Image 1 (cartoon, rainbow, N blue to C red):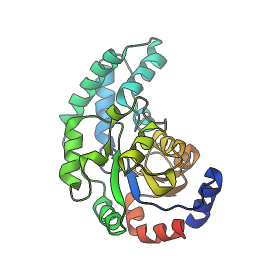
Image 2 (image 1 turned 30 degrees about the horizontal axis):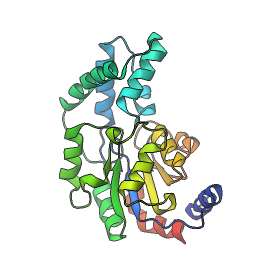
Image 3 (image 1 turned 180 degrees about the vertical axis):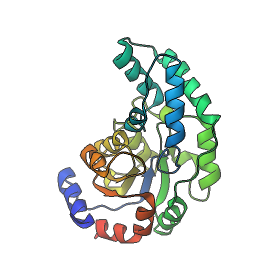
Image 4 (image 1 turned 45 degrees about the vertical axis):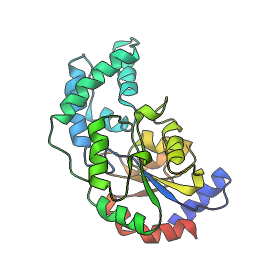
Length: 245
């Protein structure tokens, strides 16, 4: 199926007339930064301290969700007990500390070029992340300050329900200027994030940046997929014409 055909399927499914993008809403980890290998280690080592086995697959499969939600779900599944948000936050703080002790992850290949192309296309750049860690927000502003300001960043603390619920991307639409779903494009690399974008009825791109397959992203609800971020960057102008024609 071509990108234009995928766009028509999206429009028919949501009863929209056209895709008229004014903003791109990026996930952060595994999309803007090649940070997931560090997250995998931090998740495994921190949760092991609490008797939880967090595998590489678990880390990628739950990527994009609020950390405290992931922890509460893992504790319930493996220890059959419910923990408070406070206890989950304390466990997440351990994970965050281990993550920030690691070397700073690099920007994902293709992202600087893609942001410049999006900027030249006249679309605003926004970030919707399940993280709420201040150092990560500061790095976003340091690395992408030419395209992004803090008012266009949605974090875990802006919503009550994280991904896969629509709430983060609905908030992202509001921060992008009170846009409608057909006026934005989501860029995600994880099933929960794809589900959140689809639940918000935004045209959602699934990009393979880790071990999860393109099929996994499609089954989660991605409207279209790219094999990596370099491919999306290389084909941005053509892609934009295809989905808006």
